[in-house]
Image (cartoon, rainbow, N blue to C red; front, side, top):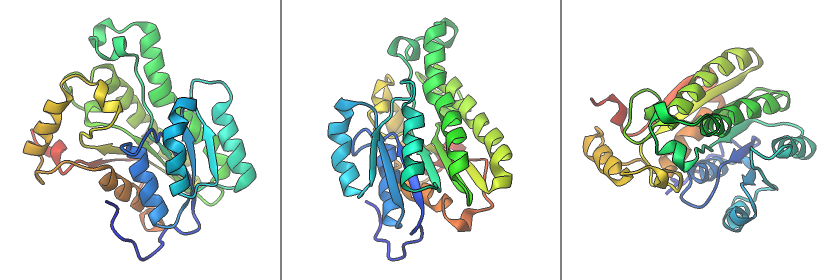
Length: 260
C-alpha cells in the first residue's frame, strides 16, 4: 500500500508512465506513488487487449492522456510525445518500465541466441529507452528525470535470466551515457533495480518461485519488495531534493544484492 501522503511534493509536475499492464505492474506502483505526491500523469497501453486492463487504472489516476504505445509500431512513440507537447507543452519525468524477449530467445543459452531474437530483445528493452530520452529532451524545458527498470542479472549471472541480462547491462550503460549528455540541461537519468517481483513479465522466467524464496530468505531485511516500495523510491528521485543525484542504478531489494 502507498502510505498516506499529506504533502503534494510533486504537485505541478507532469510525467509519462510507460509499461502498465495490470495492477501488479511495477509501472502501476510508480504511477500510484507519483499521483499520490500530486503529479499529473499520461499513461500508455500496449494494444487493444491491454487497454481493457489499463483504462480503469488510468481513470483512477485521473490521467488526461491515455494512448497506445507499442514501441515496435512505427510512429506510435512519436505520437505519444507529440500529444504530450500539445496538451502540456512540457514534461518533467518519464518512467520506462518495459522489456521483452521472444520465449525461444529468453529460455535458450546466450551462445545459442538467434540474431533476430537478440535484436528484438535489445530493441524493446534498451533502444526504446534511448529513443524516449531523445523525444523527451525538448519537452524537459526546466530539467526533468528519466527512469528505466533494470535487474541484478545485468551485473551477475542469474539462472534463467539469460539474454535479458545482456539487455539490462546495455540499458544501465545507456543510463550513464545519457545522464552525462543531458545533465547540463538539468535532466537526470536513473535505472531502478527492484528485487524479484511476482509480475506478469517475471512469469516467463523458469523457476521464478525459487528465486523469490531465495530473495526473501537471503535479503538483510528478510522481506520481498513490493511495487509500492519501488514506486515511492522512484518518485523521490523525481523531486527537486534529488537534483544532484543522476546516472545511478538504485537497488530497491531489501539489500539482496549485497549478499553473496
